[in-house]
Amino acid sequence: MNKIILTGDRPTGRLHLGHYVGSLKRRVELQNSGEYEKILIMIADAQALTDNFDNPEKIRQNIIEVALDYLSVGLDPTISTLFIQSQIPELTELSFYYMNLVSVSRLYRNPTVKSEIQLRNFEASIPAGFLCYPISQAADITAFKATTVPVGEDQLPMLEQTKEIVRKFNAIYQEVLVEPEILLPKNNACMRLPGTDGKAKMSKSLGNCIYLADSPEDVKKKVMGMFTDPLHLQVSDPGHLEGNTVFTYLDAFCEQRHFAEYLPEYSCLDELKEHYQRGGLGDVKIKKFLNNILQEELAPIRKRRKEYEKDIPGVYEILKAGSEQARIIAAKTLDEVRSAMKVNYFDDEALIEMHSKKYEN
Ligand code: TRP
Image (cartoon, rainbow, N blue to C red):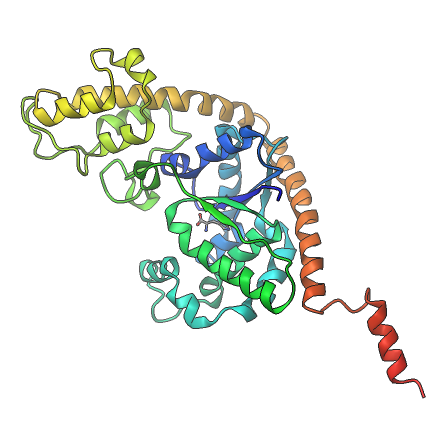
């Protein structure tokens, strides 16, 4: 079977290092592997509106930011199709049909929805659109017959729900839809990159993010101010690795070659960790090391962003062309879904013929 990737992000803000190690970097690798027949990357504006319906301007302003972030990490619009969810009306129609296949209690049980309801104080009154967004996500994935969905761990329940919808659809109607596989980040540090303050997750509201578009000075300032080990007061004190943000970031970003380049006194990350735990290794040194690694990683991204920033109409053109391409694929699947669900009347000559016969006397 042909391998097809579909993934995306909500345009609620600029993308940060959490997005980068959690998914973006992998997408670029997959894109460049040449193993995929199609790669579709979606800006999920309609989904973002399910909990930002009262702030459409925020979503509107962030579409270009996310598009620039995509292009700057190396997603190549000549290989990958970048598009905007709301511009594919076929997705809404698919969602409407899939709604018949999912119970309300199943939606309430979706762990991601559950925690988001609490987060947004939706307990008393939850918008139907928000409750149903896992169904719309199933439409996003299945419209393109995606086999592979590279996302973070928090999206596992969405993929589960999608698979259930696919199985049910295929069992009741016809084998039209494809069951997707989730592709999770390679290690735990990448799965859950904490904020610079050591808090669970990078989040704009906590102000603990390093953005892909941050200046070198900002990145350095944020790294030098990172949460480490509150018990590691003097260089000679033994340090702890658990919950130590700098080491979590090193787990996510550090490669063997970085030692020769920036810290030749050590041969590998294990040796650095051992010294830290023993005592005698200061936070400033490990922060400088991390800063060097991040600057190296971010420099080409920043440079590409600057290039694309010079041609914003061109970026909108990329999204427009991508949306047109994506729409053709989604329309084809929708056609198949409609015939499987028997809501194709005018192109079914046999049906019209049968009804003619019925009323012949
Ligand atoms: N739910 C995803 C997020 O919050 C965004 C998204 C919408 C998505 N539709 C998708 C991701 C389809 C993968 C596949 O980041």
